Amino acid sequence: MAPRIQLEKAAWRWVETVKPEDIRQEHIELAYRVNLPACKRGACRRNCKGNPNCLVGIGEQAWLGEIDENAFHNIDDPNSERRDKNTFVGLTNLGATCYVNTFLQVWFHNLELRRSLYQCHNSRAQEHNVESDYEPQSICEHLQYLFALLQNSNRKYIDPSGLVKALGLDTGQQQDAQEFSKLFLSLLEDTLSKQKNPNLQNVIQRQFCGQFSYVTVCNQCGRSSALPSRFYELELNIQGHKNLTECVTEFLKEEKLDGENRYFCENCQNKQSATRRIKLHSLPPTLNLQLMRFVFDRQTGHKKKLNTFISFPEQLDMGPFLEGKQDQKCVYELSAVLIHRGISAYSGHYIAHVKDARTGDWYKFNDEEIEKMEGKKLQLGIEEDIAETVKSQTRKPKCSKGYHCSRNAYMLVYKVQEEESADPSRTNVEVPAFLQRLVDQDNHKFEEWCSEMADMRKQSVDKGKAKHEEVKELYELLPTKDGEPYEFIPLDWLKKWLDDSTATKEIDNSLFLCSHGKLHPDKVGESKRVSRQAAQLLYERYGGGPRLDDSSLCRECVGQRCRVLRLKNQLNEDYKEVSNLVKRT
Image (tube, rainbow, N blue to C red):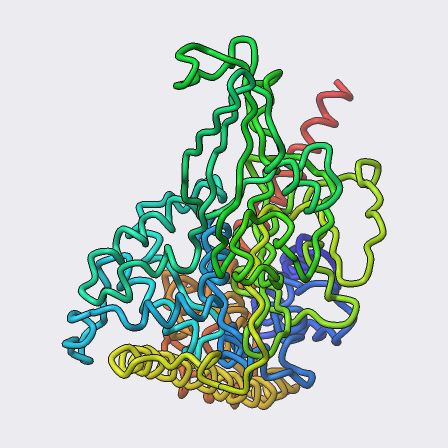
């Protein structure tokens, strides 16, 4: 179809030969472009605004073929938020709280800790009215509820914001993960010590606390003095080492005290050269080994991350490192690896590889996402680095069977090896009735939400299907056949009717009226000529007006425009004649 300006000129070309008083119906129809040929689909790249009969490119393309029902809504399937059978529950990352999530998953999988927390007295939860939302107050209450949800929730992942808020953590700032572990266990120990049940008061010590002593021997008199101490984790230097055994050996190695570091000997009553070493006396059932990856760099004055590969075993024998007490169990099994992805000490992402105590299977906990690690995926401590170039990647050393090698693991959790037992109660932790009631309440809310989302989704699909049928039916009726009655509908309204993202309002022709209450000739480019049958159906469904049919072509406006155009043409002719006379003179 010709451009809009050409169509405009063609519509009024007849004024050159027709006086206003001689205007007939055919001239009016020319001015309103009633008889222009309709464009065929595929002929126009976009709609011809100058042609009221062009009904192509107004948004009909999206409706005329077969449509996938998912196109009628933007609501995800609520079942994608549902926990799969025989899987664990994830934790939402609130911004920069992935380090918190990893520790929570590790502690949740410590069955003794979980069992003890469930036994804590919680009058608020026990007396809670199910008609209102439960809001824990203390750290112990938050952990109880969170662990119960992690165990029996129907959700794929849950929001730990209540606990994070209670701890006073900044969700947008990543904290020192190793420091957080120490502070949280200390806080939990203090909270549990206030419980009335004596078995709960020292849960943290029983689970995580070991004993060692700093033994100093005077080189002059040979006097030995020991300073006993407790530990909840062993902090192992990894710089210059290749495996865990080397790191533990260095931790316990003898240190010389001489020069300014000389030791004041009580026996000699003055400073003497001496040797000092750490002696391990007892180990806890859960042995936390911190690999000191984040160290202070004296040159820059900032922390830096050591990307050293460290090899560690699935089974660790701590017997050779213990002093005396040969009756205690010394063989440990790896139960969790905490990982920091990234090359900087101040940013990156935290992930945990955790062993399921019931089945022995390994799982990768990455905030909301949980994946079972098996086959080739069972590489503990291995996670691709963030923002690391190919050049900076170092080749991973080969590991013997039963060993794993990692440059990103910063904490290893070992559990003392238990004798094979057929007793299911050892690995079976039941959620107490008062907590299960709260979990059931949350599950009910989740099911209601799923049902509500499914209904909204169905309503959108049903509405979309009905609209699809309506458009297919009406679009076929829109074109006007020769000699049949017709009406004008605003182009903008037709586009909005075909755009499913906007609500369809009533048809408004008021802006298209001339001073005589009919269709203004200048507005014909912004309207479309449709069959009366189609117009009738559209007005019945959407209402509006005033209706502009074939009697709404304004003879007065056409006559007035004819006079103006003829006068303009005459003035142009007169100007040319006067110009020629002037030139001739």
